[in-house]
Length: 387
Image 1 (cartoon, rainbow, N blue to C red):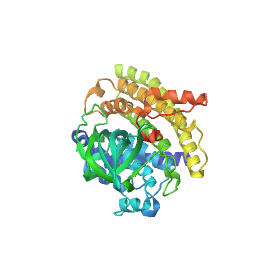
Image 2 (image 1 turned 180 degrees about the horizontal axis):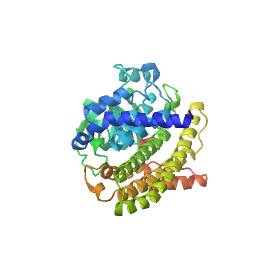
Image 3 (image 1 turned 90 degrees about the vertical axis):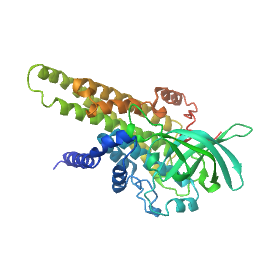
């Protein structure tokens, strides 16, 4: 059997299995505004929460391309689920900047630790004996309702300007304000987090952008690059799902006006397929480049992160265009809330509002062409050095 055909069969079986596991919970998820318990447990069974955890603590340290394919497949079932899978697994990527004693404490109960939070530096830190006193309120903390640990960022005011740091707290020490009532990605539970003068020990405060790794493994060497690529997997899974939906809607069309509309749809769907495949190839190539760099620990040039980010903007733009076109092809059937296409449109509209994939990020790619120092801070500690 041709290996490509075999891969397609295996991929189809994986999607069917994920659909059977996850689809029954979509309605409850949208009403709750976060993932229901059975979905969280399903993710645990899939190894989502341990796939980036260190092997020495029972984690898998799964190859990034393999993990990305799983996130894309989950997003094909539902974008909120894919989004939370990427966030709660990805939080582990920065934890090896903590001391070994902290990592031993985090993973003392096993590798399936759920990490959520916000990379926005929306807190203020004050140095005290053996640690910090932190006050802050952080928006858009996807997956926080299921979290064991909360990762957020804060600023320490210094005479020569603020310094950004990250902190990790047990989830029970953080208040969740359930503010997430959104147009799309309703199941992500992207609520606000708040702490008031909470004490954080030194061993749980670190710099994401600087400092040595406690565990030097490929996954932990360049987390900003990997985070930027995760968005692309969610977007392309969502775009493929929209195409699946419209094909299902149009299958009954056999005669009359419906048949004429179907003939026109062949052209549009062919365009979507070509766009989707070309964009997937581009994303796969960048994934291979980044993954090769971290595996071999090769030097990353100044243009590497801007190039990865601007590709993410392009992927988001294409996915948005495909989902909008599919929604139009779905006709009146697509406007009902029980039609998956309606949910796909809402989800892609919200997903493409993320600051990392705004069109303004093309500026960093343009600067890199002139060998200028490119930064993408925006108050996001993942993409900014201290200072």
